[in-house]
Image (cartoon, rainbow, N blue to C red):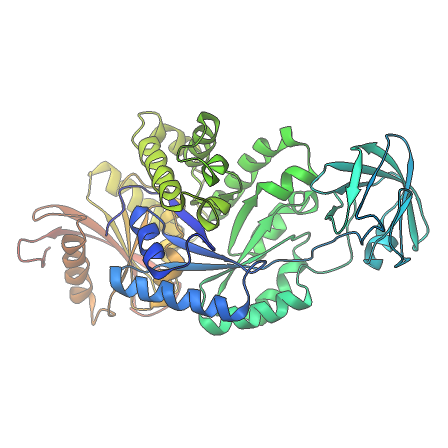
Length: 478
């Protein structure tokens, strides 16, 4: 099944969408990659879901990517004697290391790393920012605060610390167990939550050992401040606008989204825009006009993928949400201004032979109006470089490795095909043209451009361009 759009759709699966039948419907509606949220999924269910996705993949004959999203550190206050307390603006409220139930003046904070790290003047945001506290003093055992905004607090509410750099990694003990479990099932991507610094990615990469690619979720101001370093050590980025909008001013988030998207594109790393894209479709069959504009902006910006969360995981209209996102993206990409906007954001390629080949392939394909760019790729690097150029023509990524094809299913404009490796150059060209015909990317007499590395089967050696005709017998006429 060939997609007519270039941006990919990432759909979260959950109670509303976890059956094999529903997964197939979501794929047919437009989902390219499925996200499993490990905050709400145990290992047994995760393995079941992976198995169902692979069954659907076999049925539809297309590689489908799987993203396992790790929960990350969840910081929460303790409990209150009455379950909740009313607070007043300007009053003093303390978070401390006393495990006794809280009251209107204090509450237990079971996170010594916070007690040791918060300094006077730092903000503490409780319950997604509904309550804002400002630290007055801290001695490592208690943080004395002033209530700045909000009038209440209750049991186990989350704590966000936009001004504090916590001396803890992004992986908790639960995350390590979850990471081992998802890697054993062969997921393609692992998303790391609450990344603060590039070092947070090191442990996950060490555990993964290349078995899955690592996606850094940008949802803290500390990560935005060190974005270039985080991009360098990650395989992809996710703009997690939910927590980002809690820890940073809401009005700053759109600009940060553009900043992250463009930085990822310059680096040739995939970028996903996530959170509340079609939020109203959790309960309604149609989105708001503002949500349609939000999705459109991400597509115009050239994001690799746009993501649905609760809309497809727990909403009343999961298939409709995916179909709506598919329609919005497809319409944007046919808009007369789309190509110009995408082209204007293009950056200079890296000074490598492989990047020069990818640039040349795009320019030749667009100048000669070729039907497709066909990239042979074993590791996926050639496909990444082709997508970085954001060509107007489709990219067909051919790989003999199914895991590579699944990973590239997240990539902008890339149609992935698992194909046996070519025997020699003639076979490579013939195979590329035959697949272009079979997959609907060319008809007899059309021309395609082929990129590959010579010698064949040499990772990272993209150094060849070849223009070929698609023949009526599905062979190449060179």
